[in-house]
Length: 602
Image 1 (cartoon, one colour):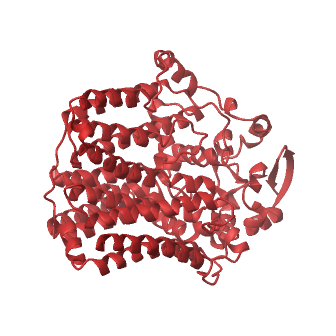
Image 2 (cartoon, helix red, strand yellow):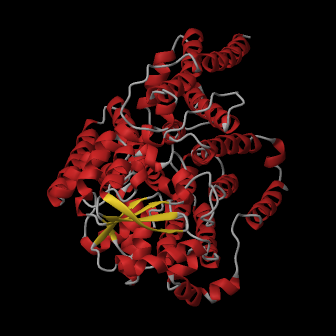
Image 3 (tube, helix red, strand yellow):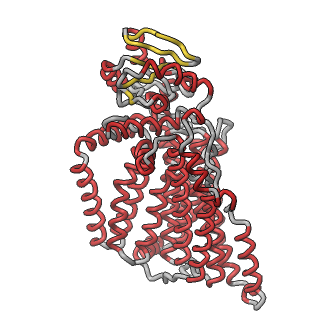
């Protein structure tokens, strides 16, 4: 009776807290502090702190409500939390049968990769150009942050494409796209590893462990595909986060602890290099792991992990001293300015605003990820092992942290990208609950059940999200060579080809050119580096950045301005008004080619 009353109070209180959070959403409004950046926020007098605090409030109020109710109804509330954090006597058992299934799926995953049709769609000169041009500049002058103002991450924008060009000794759009395909494969492989390791912590027999592994592998691998034009629920940019989850599970398995701690420490640095936003979340999760080790009183591991983190950053500093300075300045600048540069005001949950339904669905999912994971602390270990509970809690925290990406750019695509981790959580949670109940049923314990479940295993495998094309596999090498050697013109539209043909003769005598256009790909297309480090001009719209651009334009004699992408957000002549004034004062329009204007120095 007491349990039923507690459950009823919990349900009513959480529902009420969600409605209260929705009501408070619009009432959380900080006064606008002008950072001298023209964007959607500035035009609406919207402070970036609003979206962050609204998010924390919306998620935090239901979670605090849940904890408060549990505290009231559980006299041993703090004791259970203490036991949860310190106790690690759960059995960790590996299954050879599951590993065999893993090897089979991995083989098919490899064949699936060999079966893909290479992406031959036209380039997006805005997004594709962000990576092609930065990589090309680094390839010819060796610069990193000193040569390009990085908005996403040096690996994503520069190194991934540069490395694959160097490996194959060929510069092409096809090779740049192939690096994306490889990273998607590595993400799928990592998710498969994650699914495999999770089976070590569940209390099921070998048949149901195979079911658990297959179900979750099916869900995980369905979250993304090799079609670069679609919006996936999880992208390869999440690789450092997935790897950290794998390493945390490995840490719980008590094997090769020093090696695992070293690997986690390297992620502290590598994740920032990989992507500035993902690096922030990855490092916050490492802090969570350190806090966990503190409560576990494993001070030696804390010391080793902290030491390795410090050594990795010190090594980075002494290896790239000049670049480290630019890296630090660049990264701090992004954290301070980027929300104002490209921020879109987050839609109010349960409203009619654009993308509200998608945002609401994701926010509610995150709330229940956290509540379900915290609720496991108070459940019996007979059903959920203590280590399994800790994995689910870290995954819930990951779901919470990953939504921070969407707060800076709250459009449909960015909100969809962060829905992957909640899906992973629910897949693990509910599939285990279902299989655990089946394991206790009389039907499963009967003699016929083994044959039935063997049939169902085969059925799941048949519908696995992997497609094999033997013709593509057989012709893979030929297809690959043709794809990576395709000329740039194949990926350009007619107007872009026209611009290239008409400007190649004009730019041949210039060491560098400058774009005042969002078509960042033109540096690569014309095989010229940018005269300023702000090749991706749209991201450098703060007042200070504009002054730096103007100062660096002294070495510029050739500018391509305007273009169809200039109205992607706010027109560049309004967003970067200082630069626009400087160009009009010191340059003359030489020609107009389709959407673009050519300016030469007076």
